[in-house]
Image (cartoon, rainbow, N blue to C red; front, top):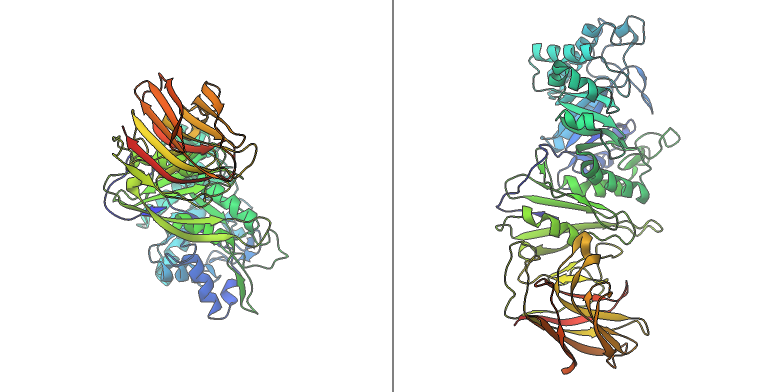
Length: 578
């Protein structure tokens, strides 16, 4: 969900909101045109496909690095060649499509001469630092590429002395803009040592952990440094993989305060028989035929990358949904807001909970929210990916308290998406929610709008014989994760011909009950009138019950809902201040 326009968010607790990706792309360079350019467009072109913000590449080290061996720029000490390997080409293609894309470099291995015959690059840290900085200088000198970040050694040990010397060497070569990520392994011991060593703490800009499982550790948080999942994902890129990626992208921040996530790998452009087959965001394994696949992780990525940019801030309005899933919100501080919701748990619905919790961050000057959604079908090939929905007005969601309108009428049918100003409070199978079992009416666009005296009416149609039921309610005092504890005045009718008036959603506090004559598969009009400390109800324009005493809550929302998670129909919902 994205909105352009003026206004400003609040309560930033992160200063970076970029997403990063790394290449394992040997076969990509061999694709003929126009297929190669199309693949690259899906990866790097802004507002097209994955729209990646940062590309992470390997500094080749003449050794196996999972699915192949990348050549070093220095096979031996007095050899320098900055045209070996495909990473230079790939970085230039990325920059050609997005000049603002950031670049990360990380060594997986080192040629033997670095350790003077020993497989250890830290015995001679000055040699290792010279080797790495030479690669960064060569990227600029020969390819006009500015490297933004550099790592230490992929998933291996680190040496504090070397990290400090690397920073010194970068500064000496006037490469102060290049930031250091450490240690591309686990959160510890780098975090603990940074707390003990102030010099190490100063030179490390970002703590990067691999496959953190969306969690961080207290030492890492205590450093106050940016935290990244500097390698993650590594999942087969079918619909299940897309779902995993959606969960990771959101929950790395929600659970672990990680503001960037690196997917290994960029594109599965290596032979399928090699390890980690099809663990890329998309698949391009047949340069001889030109065939490639734009897999679901590309479009899952787009939900974040097409609507944010490096430098955006996460807002504090993030969290988990009651029935599973998560949500985050980001802003550039200039009026642009993006909300990303993932519900990778069946029957999870987070629509209203998300909006309700984030309302305090929305400026009254924001006008419209644009919407996109994806629905992954795990048992078929009929997924809906990055589909544009109708925009909604922010005025529907604004959090300022307001009086009820003199008369507000909503027209809707069930089993679609958002209905008028309803804010869904319980389950549905995906983003297109049904009323089950409680929806709060958003009067005059204010979800926290409260009413004391009100008259509600609604046409209802019970589809489920025998056990079906619906209600209209006023003065409802809870929503979101606390919806089950809601109190108010609930006027229920059931398909078995009975009615109940309860003081709570669960129906434990029965205020009145009796026969109504209501039957399934026929339209009926319910009217609920609440005035001061009493309430009355009408059915089809005739009094059904009167003068039920009510003492609390004193105010709250108007609502409609169903007896259980079932499809029922509502129309002509009308709320009027009394």
